Image (cartoon, rainbow, N blue to C red; front, side):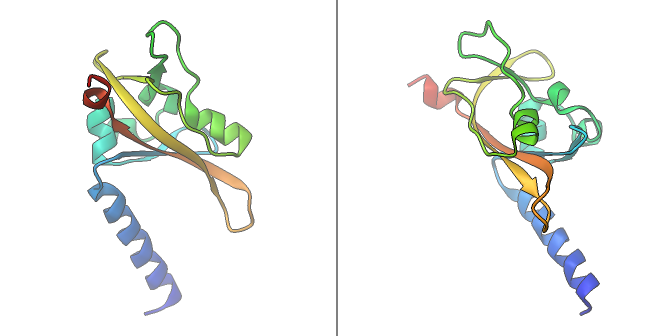
Length: 134
């Protein structure tokens, strides 16, 4: 297998893996637009994959504070700007496309090229609504 074929195979395997996990995954490029969204993230946000890709991340991932009164800066954009990983405050609310609300927890990190430059950001998140109701 050539180096190019192996790279394509590795990329395909990585995408299959990301599409198989139960957590939502969204990644953006340096332009702040969604480049990848897995099925779990599509279900959580209410944005079909085909409609989410290419949109500004702030349209797809809309967040409010626990009190529901204040918008929270989009962590993908914050990480892209700062170049360091972050987590949302406990109790952060994801506003789905239809306006319904879901409590989430996340981990958001920069994506670095081999040379170290930030080339995007990735957010992994999950619904914690039932855990917060206990």
